Structures are given as C-alpha cells and as structure tokens.
Image (cartoon, rainbow, N blue to C red; front, side, top):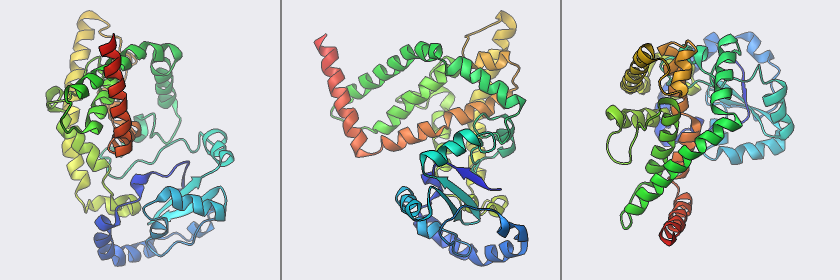
Length: 342
C-alpha cells in the first residue's frame, strides 16, 4: 500500500549501529523472499520522482541520520513531491505548501490515516477504533471526531482547560525550584506534567507524580512501553519480519501494555459502577465516552493513542536537549522572582 505523508518521522531512521549487524545477516533471505512475492504490477505504480533505491536497503543509506536535511536536498533536485523506499516500504514526502495542501485538504479523506508501527500489538483495533490511525472515515470515526471536537477542541473547552494547565505548570515550577542545587531530569518532570494534564481531562485525576511510581505503579511500565515504541524496528522496514519478532519488541510491548491496561480497566470499571449507582460522575472525557456507548476495548484504544501521542514524545525529546533545559531554567528563575516579589 502506498502511504503518502506530509512529514518524515525521525524514528523511522534507525541508529545504524543498532540495526546494521542484524540487517546484514537478514539481507540474503529478505532478498529471496521479496523477489518471489514481488508483484509485476508494482513497477507500474505512478510514483513521484525520487532517488534510485538500492536493492533491499532502498534509500535508507542515502537519507542517513539527518533526514530533514537530506529530504530538503532531494526536494531541490526532484521537486516538492518525492518518493523514497525505506527497505521494502514506500514513503512519499510532500515538502511544499501546495503539495501539503493536496495531501491535507484536497485528498485528506484518502490520506488521513497514519502509519501504525509494527510494534503495536492490536493493529486491527487501532485501525477500527482510533481517530488518528483509522484507515477509513466511517461512521465510528465521524462519531468519535464529533465527540472530540465538542469536548476537547472548542474555544469553550480550551478556556475551561486553562486553569488546569496553569495549575500543572505552577506545580512543575514549584517542584523544580524545590530541587535547587540538585541535578534533575527536566524532561521527566515536564513529561509528567503534560501527562497529568491529559489524565485529568480523561479521568479527572493525576496518574503520575514527580517522585514515586504513580497511580497503581503505572509509571514504570508506561515509560518502558514508550521507550520500546521509539526503538528502531526492522519490521517497520520489512513488514514480513513482524511475525518473527526478531528483536522481541512486540513480546515486551504486550507485557507492559497489559500492565498499563489493567490500570485503565480499574478506572473504567469504577466509573461504570458509579454511573450505574449515581448517574453522571465527573463529566470528563471518560464519562462522555461511556455515555456515548463506547466499549472498554474502544476506550482503551483511544486512551493509549492519546497518552502515547507524538506531542508527548516530542516534548520529552526536546527537554532532553540542553538548549531547552536552559530556557526552562530561565523560566523557573523568572517565576521564582515573580512569586517572591508578590
């Protein structure tokens, strides 16, 4: 399946020091398998221009580690719509406003689904019940989109969330200030605050804390699940390898996902019981989903996607960089002066 996309995920470009030894061992069998199953019609696809791919590897080595720089250079040669091969996968990049408009506006219904990484245990579930990863804009997708729009993304909803965001930011600043003179991992604390904003919108409670294991020990397995999701996976480049799980990523992800799901399950079960006894409970997003008739399985898929969103991943990544740590340090200092002054 041809999967055009507007942006290039850095996680798709592996650390070659990690994957190269395994890849070299697997090249001969992969080459034989691909040759046997390759469809004659695949050569006739009307693909955009792009650099000539190498056998088996595709354009992986040509793109390298700095994907954004390489793609910019290729755009100057081949134009705003470029075709790449990442192993056995096809990637189409739209790098101009006009091309992006065609992808996001003109052909948005055809190209709306995001790529579901091979490490995801319940790929079919995400395809059927996820607002982000669903391959078709059917009735369930439209219903979910309407619910999210009304309860999360309207001006009124953003205004009601402002107090929560301010509260969590103040808690973060005060906690970091209390650690003055100590070495701290800013990215973990920022991630905790952002995660708790989401958990309050969904469950009306904090699920993580700055110290400790969080609600019912959720912090450890959730962080491990996120780290596994960012690990370069050979199966993303060669989907035929998914069934073998050569790196053990799917097996480990299932273990941690079940631990995390057990926490969701407790909260969802309690909320359903409260609703049966007293009616509406908290009027949060979980209440809305239950009232709208979503099953526990559907709710679980939605929560997993929202809490593992690329925004949270990007936030944690950037606050691991010294530049953003310095900016945050200045912000904490200014706020400390402000609170002390008043």
